[in-house]
Amino acid sequence: MSLSVRSGLAFLLSSYWLLQSFVIGDYTLTQGQSTNVSFTLRPMEGSLAVSGRQFVIVGTSVIGLSGADSDIAVPKATWGANGTFGGPLQMATINGIVSSIVPGDCAQAGLDFTDIVGVDWKAFVTPSNKSDSGKINRSNRIDVKIKATSATDVGTNYTIMGVSGVWVDDGDGIPETSAATDDVYVCWGIGSGGVHIV
Image 1 (cartoon, rainbow, N blue to C red):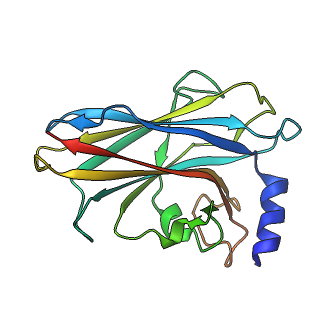
Image 2 (cartoon, helix red, strand yellow):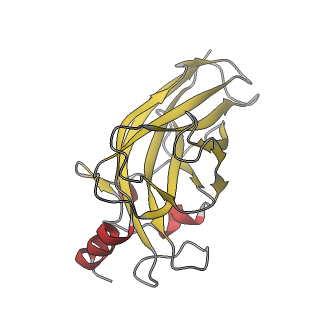
């Protein structure tokens, strides 16, 4: 399926959100300490009230050590943590989304998700379709918990990256590339920040 066709399908089949902010609760973490990575989304288009399974992908990487495994755990995510759009609701872990996104599916401001390397990714998805209901004056917050494990080295700096988007499933509940199936992926934004272990 061509990019132009995928883009047209995305417009017809998905609700449209804007990643307004990507915030990490604490910059410094001790071993065993947790904090939240918060995505704030706002509907972009009042006339659209269609839906898809909304996702966030959180990535962690050791700064300065290319290819090094991250000791930052990402155990859970909560949709509508501020009580909006059907939340709070626990999101399911479906990492197949990470490998199913192809170049052009998830690009923002010249950065394509598939170009980001050396990052450990974890994807979370709403258990059902979620619509923005055209409520452009309401925000939706997704909180993702990150935790410095007991193995996290003191003095290490980590990059934390976040991607938000929608997955329009073809009905089988399995993420597949848009070229091979009718699955469609669209990203609302890509953010990044960091934490330091003390």
